[in-house]
Image (cartoon, rainbow, N blue to C red; front, side, top):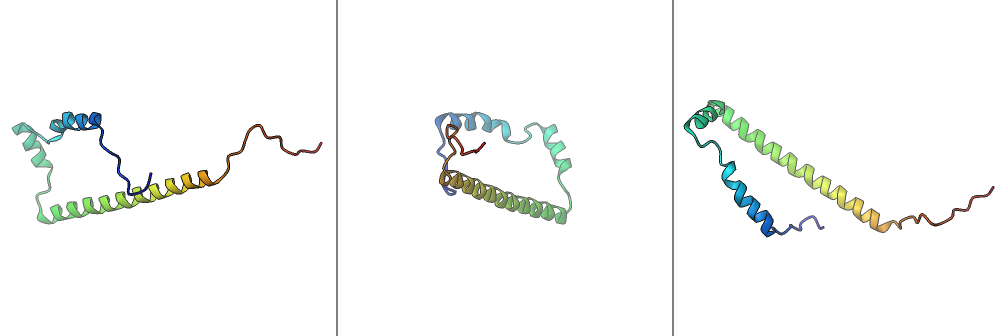
Amino acid sequence: MALTEKRKMTQKNLAAHRSNGPQSRGPATPEGKARAALMTPQDENALLMRRMQDSNFRQVWRVTNLLLKIKRQAREEEALEKPSRSLNVNENTAI
């Protein structure tokens, strides 16, 4: 698979996304929302730092995944270039 090629979404995947979507929308009850509000940083600088950390993490994650894809593709190309060794070939061994 090429690095820029995207997989197509199947009907099964689309149905799974739609059925799981409502479950991942955050807290729905007032108690859950209050609990979530307690976990957020109150200081403006803390909010900025959190956004910067998240952004840096995403950049590192993207670069890491790209490097892994490149490494995997190089391994696949190397495997295609090398002829596979046959197990039925007798080696020249002198006694």
